[in-house]
Length: 143
Image (cartoon, rainbow, N blue to C red; front, side, top):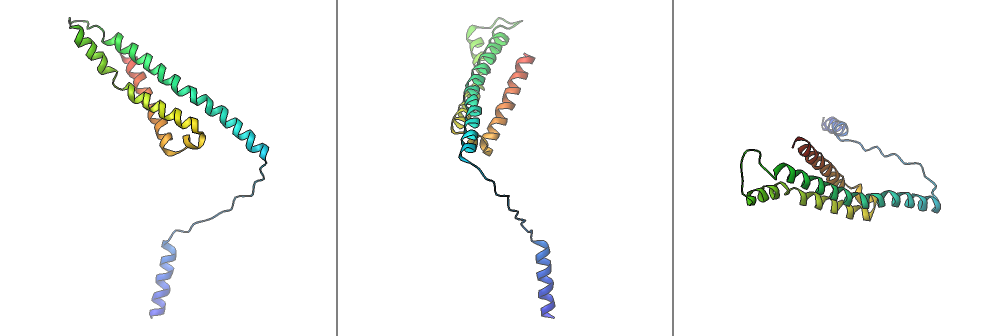
């Protein structure tokens, strides 16, 4: 009786526990020339990103500042003191340091290489930068 119970528990345990399927990858023959060519191709792509992030940061700053000054520089119905106008524009520029910090972090990651940019942290940061850029663009469009 006890033997059958142990066999049943073992069988249930075997059904419940997940099994890892390990497959061996085929052995790839790589040469030094292949590694050098791959490194050159990756450097070319990453060097483009090292310049693209600061350009995107500068373009975002210019566009957002121009939009804030145009939209908030004057009020159509009220005569407001200049201090109020300057404070309103400054408040609209509050998201820009976040964009600068994101672009700086991504530029630093691009200087390290694709291995850093492919990590989950920097993929999330890229997605956040994309979302914030779309938000800023939509706000400029509406204004």
